[in-house]
Image (cartoon, rainbow, N blue to C red):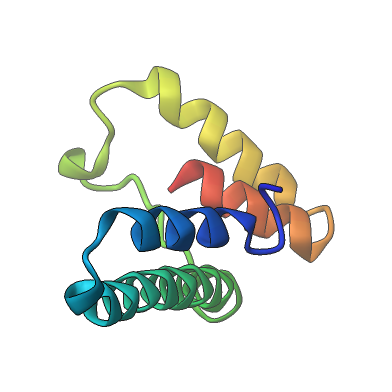
Length: 101
């Protein structure tokens, strides 16, 4: 029920029960717009993550003192994850990118 648009159907049925007949059409339009925008945002974020992984080079030079992280505890595991992802396949690199950024 949660997958395949079940949540949207429940939201539409709740909307049909609670909104008056005169405002139902506009309420359905607003809900459909929000759902469509959410799907578009999800697709664009996936495309952006893939684009960053494929086309942008990570420049992590620690020559400047301002570039050093204040807390090294969290960044060491992220850097180790990204360094090890260069040795594994492309999908694991994208997952690492999403976890570290």
